[in-house]
Image (cartoon, rainbow, N blue to C red; front, side, top):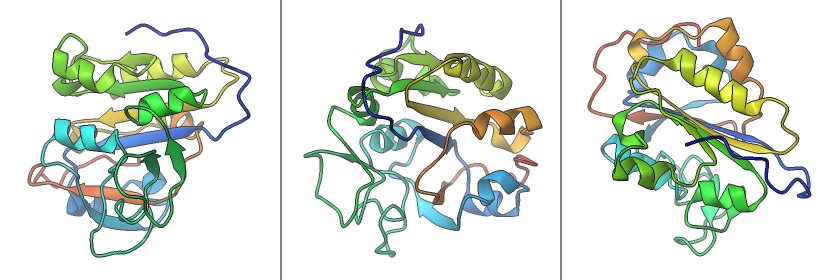
Length: 219
């Protein structure tokens, strides 16, 4: 999907959003990893994914159901109690919602609020050549699919290019894969710090995969 032109710049200044998912990342794997930048955001929670595989989880997250802890009645930590991204008239209202959006999903919702929507996903479910891929990415104005699960450098570079010379808020989605073999460099960290994130709650998905304890270092 090619990068499109800037959209309505007359919107009031909004907070940009960086939404990162770590594919098949177990809580215990992340817990022992050296990932100071992500861990510095906030408390780490042992959260459950909204689906049991990549496509279903992302489809749910794209309508506001992020990973959560069902036993905690806290907004954002439990998406049924309060959502980070709330689609208007989609599901029951929680005790608190941060971004209240209208549209068929959160990407469409941010676009309607004047955001430039940018994404990159590494696994085949995000392949724009497939109908299933299109169902996940069609609302992004710019989306980069690297064609493999070991091209974080290319993903970061492409997102950086999309972010150049922008004067509007952005919603950026970045899905990483093959995390047990990744090293996040200082250059990566510089790009990832461009966009402020709210709320600062780190939820790591508990999955029955990724049993190898090796993980990303210095992330």
